[in-house]
Length: 216
Ligand SMILES: O=C(CO)[C@@H](O)[C@H](O)COP(=O)(O)O
Ligand SMILES: [Fe+2]
Image (cartoon, rainbow, N blue to C red):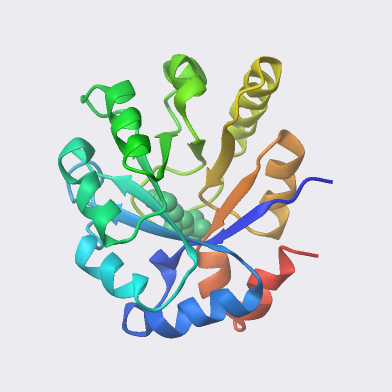
């Protein structure tokens, strides 16, 4: 059985206690942490910038999975790289030249991903698959934690799995939005490699046990 990458998202954590939460994630056995960056323009919410990422970087060696929900990733991605990002994922629905952006990110020495919103189909990013380390399928409208998983996105995971396998692309499928113990199994069965989970973990009475529950 392949190893599924479980990625706690700190969006639903207490931002005054992020250091503590990073330690909790390390203790859980998870190796990645998901950091949602929102600009109040691409999505109707604002979160953190490179300054926060840089501070978090000093506290942990967890793999930093940065999800840029911003209009101009071509302008800001390098700041996140310098702050300690290991993987930068930007959205397909931006206007910048995407292949160049992927190449720029990868040639800086880190990994690059592209995310698709619920209304964007796999065909929009298919031509980029040979160059990508990861595709992030959103299973909620980006912008907020705590929303319900959109079951009709499962077909999209299956389509992407098929294209990746048929062409032997070296590209992970990450799923983000409404992931809990039930929806995690659905996504794994559909072919996901990595699962992001925020509110299920941080709203739980025992977040450590909630992360661990994904590994059993
Ligand atoms: O990108 C986003 C939201 O836009 C996510 O990464 C959320 O952090 C997921 O939160 P839950 O749906 O698991 O509560
Ligand atoms: Fe995210």
